[in-house]
Image (cartoon, rainbow, N blue to C red; front, side, top):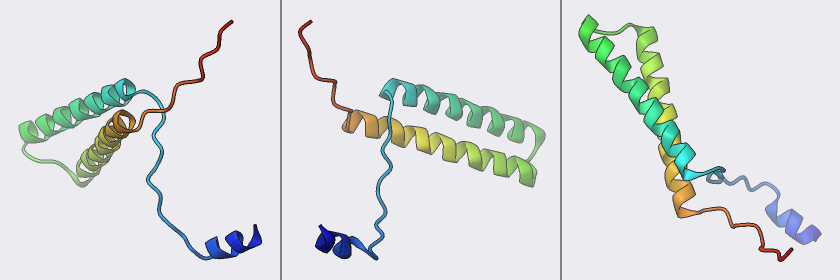
Length: 88
């Protein structure tokens, strides 16, 4: 046991985050954030540009959309196993 502990010590590895929940929920989140981006870009184009704060908000919305899209794909590709069936 200690050999395995020594082997792992000092090795930091990045791991892909585990997305929980349903792919439908992640998809709804992605559509919501994408619609917020569209609205923000429409207002920016209509008003002739955006401020630094507006650019940061659009950037945050893009990041939130990307996380939701990745969550959707991850939950479709790697669904959680169903609980074991029981006969009651």
